Amino acid sequence: MKRYSPRIAASAACAAAALALTGCGGGGSASGGASGLDIATLTAAQSLDPADAIGSALPFFQAAYDTLIKRDPDGSYKPMLATQWSYDKDRTHLSLTLHSGVKFSDGTAFDGEAVKANLEHFKNGGGGGAKYVKSIKDVKVVDPTHVVLELSQPDPGLEFYLSDAAGLMASPAKLKDGSLKTTPVGTGPYVLDKGKTAVGTKYVFDRKKDYWGDKAKFDTLTISVFDNETALVNGLKTGQIDSAVLQDANQQAAIASDGNLKKTPFTFDVQSLLLFDRGGARTPALGKVKVRQAINYALDRRTMLDKIRQGRGEITDQVFGPETKAYDKTLDAYYSHDPAKARQLLAQAGYSGGFTLKLPRVPSMGDALVSSIQTDLGAVGIKVTWDQLDAAGAVQKVYRDRAYSAMVMNNGQSSIDWVTDQDLVTPGAFNMFGTTDPTVTRLLAQVQAGDANQAATASRELNRHLVEEAWFAPFYRLQYLLVSSKDVKAVTQSGMAVPSIYDYTPAGS
Image (tube, rainbow, N blue to C red; front, side):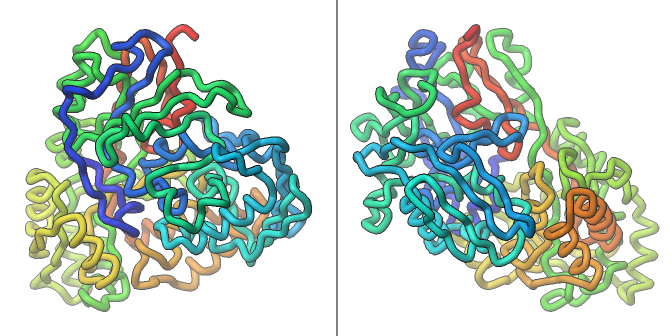
């Protein structure tokens, strides 16, 4: 199943671009060791302006732009454009010390004013990630190498965001003229070769000779955009591309026996039926906790995983990932498959005759998944009807019109509790009806402002509360497969569905 990134969908339609294998250009395996790296993706960059950076498109931006903070594959933070950073006692002021002598590729100096301009551009640019820096009230420039981020309230996810899209730094001279959408100007290790780039299908970057940091490992970086994994697998097998992440279970199986390719399984996304309408505004039944619990008991997750994913994944009933403080292994199996229990709960909630649940169907949803959900819920009296939408239509109807009470989605399981809270629990794109309750409000405040021990305890309590109240109906964590040629070493990246560009090195280096 093609990845339908909810973070991208929240701001813009994910337009897929077709790419023929002929003319792709070889990477390490085709053109010799460290001379070139060609990675492939199903996620197109809608723009190369950092304000639009989000989700699995981040490698496009990492090539040309550095972030304030770097995130290593294990999730730990390291200096990048910021050499050091620290919070004050109340965690409402984050002070950063910046590298001196760094210049953007247009010759503009990187300094405190550039940081201020970029953070304001990201916050006000209208991109899907803008909400992640809403806590930044002001950016005080102390001097060219020191800035202080003044926060309206503590933000436990801010370091993560500054190592992600919000931390990307572009030339302040280009922030307002719109040129960054097609011509990135950053301090990063590569510069875009516009002559070899076909926007929407193939992006070619040349190593920057005077890069201020560690020299890029490859002379050229090519990111090729595919619209299906069959062509992507063919490219891997023939050596026309060096690395890609496979999401479709059938394609993972098709490449499993190829001894010329290195394969690393990992989990990141959780696939769920996200229940938006917990207040019953559009579908009154969903306002009843017993109805939401009934949905969870009705789902045959084991059969879904085995039949749809060939067992490639991990059943779960929680949206928090294994790297978080909130994660509780016992909650992975909180809801058994129990249709009788589901029918009993529906009757207790006043829906013994069932009800109708209308769901949107986007192109990425396969027939097997649609049929499984419809069959499982139908067996307990919940009639599922589907509205067929294209990607652009889904953005309008789901997020702007709020036309549906629930939707099947893949959501990344961050290693940072507060990132998941911001994505799924606080009001926003995936809590579009603004659901809360006194327990959620109390625990979110403790996660946000408490010390490390208090925050961890509150996160675990919040997770259990959300599962018991059936805020969500997760199916399983999807197992993906990072595939690379023998000439390239690729490492999975905490907090992302794809590796960062820094996670690729020539084999043996």
